[in-house]
Length: 92
View 1 (tube, rainbow, N blue to C red):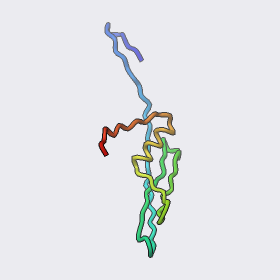
View 2: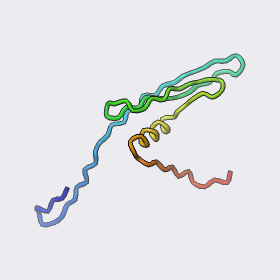
View 3: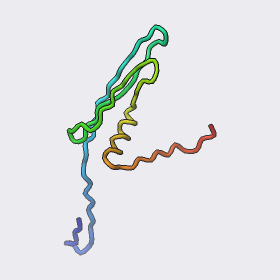
């Protein structure tokens, strides 16, 4: 948007507001051999519409767990955004 009514130029950038709501889920699993395990997941809604559901699955092997950060990154990618995380250099 452009306004020059006062003899100078003012530029307005109007960004669309988006509400992203993350409801976290948890799962636990108890095993006599392996012990206890837990997993996280969640439901993500954008402007009131569910766009992502990642069920947490706690298990002895091959469980599935998603942090809030992972849920947010997946959501941004689904919305068409490129997400780049710079973890810095490591000598490990």
